[in-house]
Image 1 (tube, one colour):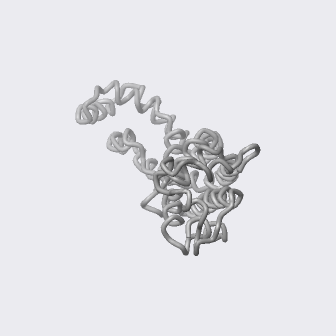
Image 2: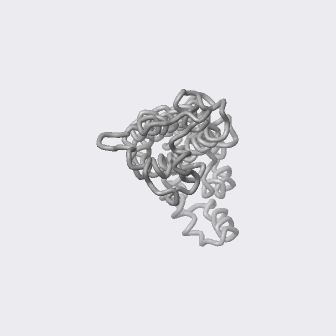
Image 3: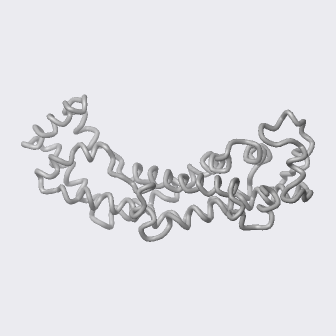
Length: 253
């Protein structure tokens, strides 16, 4: 499929090597059509690219994250725990803004993922292709997680950081950290919350001071992308209508 990769061996592996397909399954698709090794490889590439394209189309648009309860990025727990003392400081409204900005940043970053996914589809190895064809229903999604998460994190981080910084959210977070470190009446409120959470006051303050908001938002954004990739993959495997290319119809028909 990629340079130097051939699908010739997959057609001659022993029947027992496959958990869900036998040799006949690999050579025949819809209506008993014979599938050559090139068609199998190209069909799997189609599956990967269609899965990625459809998932990105869902989240990489206005309200793709913020308007969808399934993937909307929540506030991290440490900030939810600090909502009361932040409100005492007059900073309560910033939490809603932070949540909105994280989701907007994810919507802006998501389209950048498509090129990364397409490259991974093109460069798929023989072993990964075999796992996708014969493995669990989310094998393609798991392949993308293994091969793309590092590059996606690198691509998403500056976009998310810019969205949070441009909104003033990061400046507000810096202000909150300074006030938390100043030793004022809010420390008592934080202490009570810390006890309820089973951690010392200094532990909660330290967590807030060192919290990586951008990293949290990037990780949550990637979870949302993979959520819909899994749904799209399952749909291709189970729903003939989702097989939108001739090769997908032959491979999974």
